[in-house]
Length: 255
Ligand code: ADP
Ligand code: MG
Image (cartoon, rainbow, N blue to C red):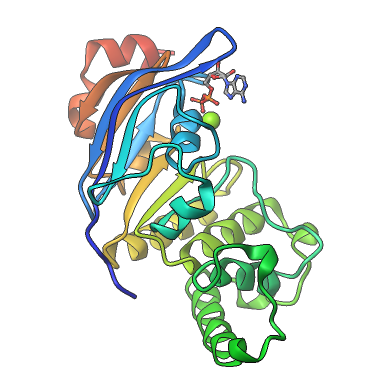
């Protein structure tokens, strides 16, 4: 698994939804192998930023580049192929498939550009399939999901479903992993598990954008934070500086 040390640069990004400016000249840079905490009040544009970087929505204005290559408005599967993988605020697993099957889908992103076009039965993919299954077991081990391997995802507790979503993203071997509120609805114990997984991801050299509201959780993980308010960056720097920043306290921490 090759880490290519790609830097993410977001330059003056604007996103309008029918008259509503969800992002307003947002800029940020993310050094390879670091974890950026993205925080701010509800509706401040956090998910929108992730949706633009991952190509889910078109950009209104501005530029995004990754490893020096411009990716603004590329189709999302091509952005994924550049190594940018994200999870959704609401788990996006296939509910009536097992954990193992969902994870196989994640690892197939490595070999095919389009999940729908994958066929496990094609001759050329036999070796790939074997490698994929090995990887799936390794990641299930890492994420403590082995005991659920053959259970349908929809029958599992919410916290486990979230873990499956993160495991699936890891299996796609990202260069940049964007996690949109991965800790929402997790128990204390599951959050510790998530901290362990994200640290593992960072050790591999993968960059991470982590959206979350739990400051205690973020402090354990992030190198820097960006605070959004009404689509604008109001703070960028370390966590300590953020906690004593007047504008951040007024917009976010105070409430
Ligand atoms: P956050 O993730 O920080 O809570 P969002 O990025 O989801 O905030 O939303 C930012 C703003 O953009 C909100 O006002 C939200 O209502 C609006 N918004 C987000 N997605 C859409 C959409 N698909 N259509 C219209 N408005 C949207
Ligand atoms: Mg959101």
